[in-house]
Length: 314
Image (cartoon, rainbow, N blue to C red):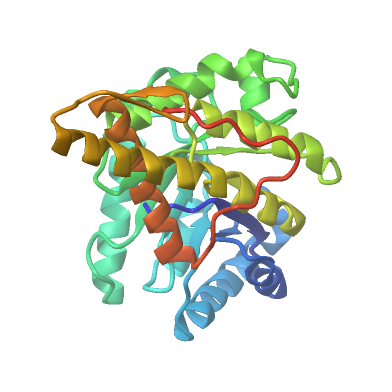
């Protein structure tokens, strides 16, 4: 999956809000047909999402467009897929998935719809949202259920489906969800899904809390976030962009390590930290990740405000 730092939910029945998301600088939009759309507007929302995705694709776009259909057990999902699977979307955010059998069924249906619509086979990717205890327990199996699966959401917000399923009481520190987030992250990494995303921060006005929440997830290993408000986009983009300090440090590690190898050395000290081959590999990986960001979003290293973000090999 492309390295989306911010994936902004947009109610599917509000076409103009998609343009607001683009203007906010979101790396990807999630046109939502599920929880953000009233029951009596579902059919209208499908048509709006189809029209919106095709319109956004027509002008060429540097950002992603994804659709969240209704859940497997809603009775609505097949109508959703028939309307929205087209060349204008990059993938589907699949809600409340629990078993690999569900994903296989989604794969088969989408494959047929791609063929019928003249869409490149395999184009439509899946991002799974694990919102039940059963799903989290089987995260490793879900991550490998289909080649279309490119990421999973480590969603641990308050009061939502996952909070109800696990019974936790949300705190900003997140200790109550650390195991679940770690399990989903490990399942992603084991399956070679290198861009897991976190979410959701639901307090629209508490941007300080949002920054801390995203920062702790980045520290854990997440590489982007789903957000619910345009004002949260720039914060997610900044948190998940390596800071200028980090970027300079990684470049220095690579340069000095390469010079050391020429001298016949395999270990050295950079910025007071011990560096050997393992650390140089990590630095190169971060620089490669930064290159993807720069190419995909035309971004610059994030400025560091307040105390410098810690530079760690992870």
